Every structure is written in structure tokens, then in C-alpha cells.
Length: 353
Image (cartoon, rainbow, N blue to C red; front, top):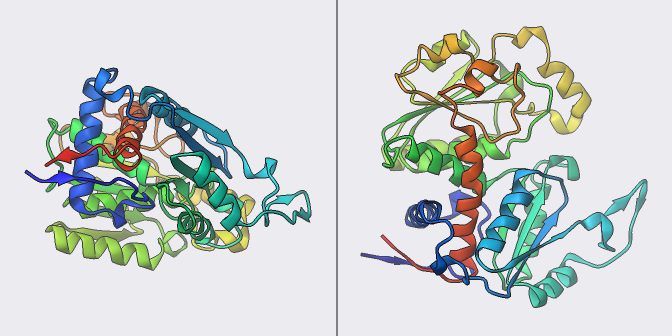
């Protein structure tokens, strides 16, 4: 038996965790879900504060982190940069001269025992700027920094996906199973982060990955693809890219379908309105997860989505609200994996593997 200790560790992406650390977090999350209100979890963060720093709004992220901190005996404090005098934060057309990241991070380090940051593509000018800002905060703090979704990664969502998949695989590891990660039509110009994390954690854990998208406009960043390919090779899985053609064919022999819109690689140049117009085109009308396509998958194939769902575009109501869908299990799992992350990185709870 090996004890896994993650005290003080930042969680920026699952790609930067060891496989054993991922397994430990999933094991603890499953235990916490199975015995949610047990006394042994109730004081792991007693009288401690977790700061939630939201550059972008959310529903599940704020609720699940607040609930997680409360159930561990702590408190989650919600703050927004726009309400603070931070250097680089814009109010209207005016850029505010204010406190540096260095100083803000050092102060938060004195007030709290953990810091979560959420900063998506709509809060930055270039791809990767959000992730860079998050890492800048982590550079100046001694407390663990947890990525609550940036413009590249979303580790909490990736872990919640994986926990849901294991639950619907008789509570067994999903190594050797196959997931289809497919682009879908939609009008929400969605971020890469959840999609990237799904590709990375699944390939890392030995799940066979199929990545399908309609054309060159929706290719994902090369560095993410290269990481997923290397992960698959190291874990003994496969990684396959399917571009164009009949989207139905990609569903053959898969155990999980993750049908989600993501914005095109020129999003930062063309902007949100132009991306929505393109993705909503009838050109992509067949890029929707429906029952006809799901019937070509393996028996018992499940539908996954990080939510919110663009029902009628990404997936039909029949699939999204039917027996194939595990989206609500995955949404609940955000709470449990985040409790596990906070327990291990903030409270120093150790897990035996």
C-alpha cells in the first residue's frame, strides 16, 4: 500500500498530476459520495476559508465549491476582480491602475488556506492568457491554488467526468473502454477547457479516445492533441481523430459519448458573435447526438456532458433526458471531487492505494 499525500499541491490540470494522484482523488471522492455527511469529513477544514476568485460567472462551480467547503467544516468566500482595485482589470473602457498580482496573491495567502480561480476566454485577449494569470497567482502563494476553469484546462470537470464513467462501469476503472469526444452544433460559443480536460484525463487513464469534428475550423490546439497522443501510448490506449465525413460513423463501438460544442481555432480573431453564427449554420445540422446515432454505439453506451446543455443543438432531448444520460451524476460529482481535492491539498488528508 502506498500513501498519497498532496498537501499544498496546486491543481491546475490533471495532466500535471501523477496517475496515482488522480486515482487517489477519485477513490476519495467515491468514498465521500458514498458516506457524504460522515463525521470524519466534517472538520477537515474547520474554521478555514477557501477564496473563490471569479473572473467569469458560473452556476455549478460556485455552488459545488461552496457546498464542498461547508461540508468539510470550512467557508468559501466569493470575490470578483471587477469589484476590486486590481491592476489590469477594466471597468468600461478604462483600465484601472491598482494592485499587482504579486501583492494581491500575498495578501490572500495570509487570509485563506486555499484559493480557487475561474478565468475563461471571454476575460482574456489571447489563448492561454487565463492559464498564465492563474499560474502567476500560484507563483506568489504558499496555499494551494485550484483551477476552477481557465481558458485551457478544467481539472475538476475532468475528474467529475471520470468518476461518473467509473460509476457507470460497475465502479471499475474505465481503462480499455472507448469514449467519443465529438464536436456538436450550438449557439453558445463554448470554451475548450472541459473538452481538453476530457481528452487528457481519459487518454491518461487508458481509455480509448475518438475525437470527431466537422472541418479544419474546429481542430483543437496541437499541443493538447500531442499530449493526448502521448498519454494514450504510455497508458496502452488508442487515440483516433475523425475529421469530416458522416458523424454517425464515429459512434460505432463506443461506450461513452461526449457531444459538445466548442469554438473554432480563430475565435480570438473573429469574436463570439461570428463564432455563434458559424456554429449555428445548417451546414452542421447533422452534428448532433441523437438516438439514431447512439444506437450504433455499444449496448449501454452513456451520454456525458459538463452542462449547461444546448438541448436541440448538441444533443436531442430524447438522449439528454433519457436513460442513457449520466449528466446529473457527473454534475453532482463536481461537489465530491472538489471535496476530495480540498481535503487532500488543503487539509493534507492522505489516501492509501
